Image 1: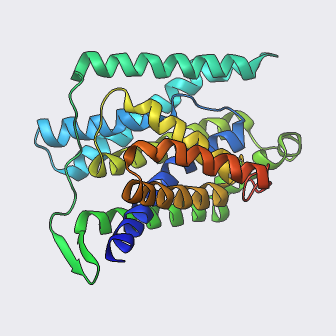
Image 2 (image 1 turned 90 degrees about the vertical axis):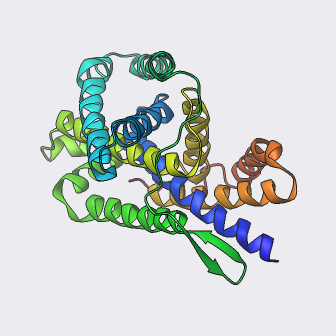
Length: 289
C-alpha cells in the first residue's frame, strides 16, 4: 500500500508538470489553430538555457529562469513574425505551419546536439532534502514542483478570465469572425498567444528538467506526450488538458510500479484509444481556452 501511495503521489507530481506543458500547446491550438510540432523542443531549449546559466555559469537559479523566459519571448516573436504570420495568410496554411514547426523542431534538436552534446543533463533542484510521510519519503523539490504547477495553472486561468487580453484570446478561440467584428486585433492576439504559449511551455520544461533527465532528443517525447494529453482532454480545452495530464501522469507512475517503465508508452496509448473510443471529442471536448 505504501508503494502504491508513493507511486500515486509521484504520478500527481509528474501529471502537474505535464499539465503545464500541455496548457501552452492547448492555448496555442485553441486560439490560432496552429499545432506546434516544436512544442517539446521549446521546453527543452528553456531547460537547457537554465542549466547553462545556473549550472555552468554559476548564476542564481532565479536569474537563470528569467534568462530562459526572456529567450522564450524572443523565440516566440521570431517564430510568429518570421514564419507563422505569413503562412496563416495562405490558403494551405495548415500544412504550411505543420511543416514549419516540424522543421523548427529538427533544427532545434540538432542545434542543441551540436552545442551541448548528447550527454544527459538536468536543471538544478530548487529545494533539496526530503520530507518523511507515513508512506515513505517525499523530496522537497517534488513538493515545490506541484505547488509551482498549481500556482501557474491558477495564474493561467486568472489571465484568461480576468484580463482584457485573455478575454480577447478566448473570443478569438470561440469565433474568429465574431472577434473581428467587435474590433479585436487578430494579429496582435496571435502574437500574444505565441508569447504566452512559449513562456508556459518554457516554464514546464524548466520544472521537468529538475525532475527528469534532458537530452537534445527528448523534445520528441515531450511533444508526443503533449499531443496525447491535448487530444485526450479535448482539442482547445484547457480544463480538459489539465485533467488528462493528471490521469496520464498517474497511469504512468502506476504502470512503472507494477509493470516496468517499458510499458509506459503502451499504457498511454491504450488509455488514449479507449478514452477517445468512449468520448471522441475528448473528456472535456468543446470547451475552449
